[in-house]
Length: 88
Image (cartoon, rainbow, N blue to C red; front, side, top):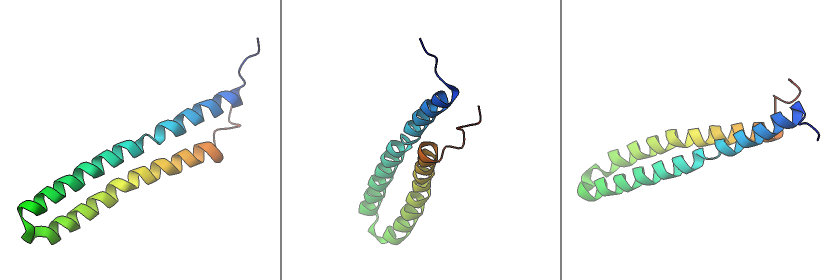
């Protein structure tokens, strides 16, 4: 039986890490959906505050979207330009 080389081990764990990093997208999508729904509810209750609610919503959505962009960047780095390969 052959053993697993250190490079194969690092590549396997990197692929696992990249997959786990992409689960951030589920959380971000769920959070953005909830936030948008609550914003629509609040606009329906108080239409005169539409501008303030929309501004706050867009700012919050942009901030939460950055976490999914960072997770995508980490997944791409782990998949294609892995800095850990060759360290062992």
